[in-house]
View (tube, helix red, strand yellow):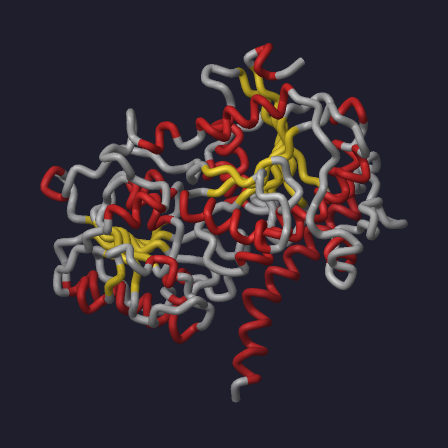
Amino acid sequence: MPASATNSLRVAVLADSDTRWKWGALTASRLAPEGADIRLDGFLLRGRATPTARQLQEVGVRPDSLREVTGVEFLRALGTPEAAESYDVLVLALVGGGVQAMLHGLRHAWGARSRRPVVVTGYVGVVYEKLADGLLLRHGADLVLANSRQDAERFRAVYEGVGADAASVTEVALPFLGGTPYQGAEEQEGRPYTVVFAVQPSVPDNRKDRTYLLNRLIQHARLHPDRQVLLKLRSKPGEHTTHIEELPYQKLAQKTDLPSNFRLVYGHMGEVLDTTDLLVTVSSTAALESLHRRIPTVVLTDLGIREALGNHHFVGSGCLASWDQLDAGHEPAPDPEWVARQGVAAAGTVTGTGSYATAFDAARDRLAKLIAAELPPLTPYYTPVTAPGYLPGILARHHLGPDGSPLPGAPAADRQAGPVRQIVRRAARGAYRHGVQRVAPVIRRMGEL
């Protein structure tokens, strides 16, 4: 029975990292009808970035069930007629190649079945690289969510430009925006002015630039002893996020004499922003969370404004500045038109009647109509005909053949890994992370000699 008829929504979310789990689970709640009872089953795709228990707890979303699966295990779990009709919505919160593989796998499993979940996908934040590649890998979902008006226009242009159906593109907003609007530093009685530097796992990607940013943050703390300066970290050593972090800032800071007003912090970004007076970053999505609350926000130009850094996305925002300017007391003034096009802090209010409060209305309406309709088979743009040299490799990485069927020897969903296999799996994951964080940087430095 459609969700609209029962005022409930049965959702499955497949995610491959902590940030994508956060996006997928929160998106599911935003898409639910007002007052609906949501049944949320979580599936974590086994891989290098599978979230740890601490990372899942930090996200703050409690699913009704949660288990770790391979891609083939997930397809076998969702591919049966009973499973296909037991969910209203399937959110694919994966990297582009993972989305494409699941779309083909589900197409093979479901065939022409018209009663199936509505498949939803999108991006966890700012889309500043691989626009065409990532979008075409997501094509074939029933809804491809765009986090802003600007993204929706770009997404449609890419699809239409290659002759693909763009009807799936639906404008929404980032699902994790919110929180108490910033009242100004003068209203923060009882605590010091707080500067937060939000780090990113892969930007910048070298020791020299990361050490430079850390040293400038420490210098800012020393120049302003009356301020509290926080280094907001994404993960603890040994954990992985959406992007690989070879040089964690906490390791770079170990041998540094830190001033008393400087601290390293973990935790939920929203809770950190509750006590933030100035948010500084290279290009993190945290900048959009901060702008949404009207917290003064700076996107650094010290390392240049470059596509490789992602800060080129903020050209025109009014937020670009350097550490020299911040040390001298500069506070940025964001451009209202630019901010509005990003789907944040528009219409003069963060909550209540602002545009963010209605950002998911169109998607919610479209979803309800799709749930009530008989759906056609999934039809990704990439097929063995349109991309014969690209698609098979993507599918093979998930143990799928060119037609989306599981390859011989793929893991079985009905066979629980034994104790030895579990130990080997944990050891392999630990070895991979050790290689990324310790061995790879050493090899890279040796190559530069």
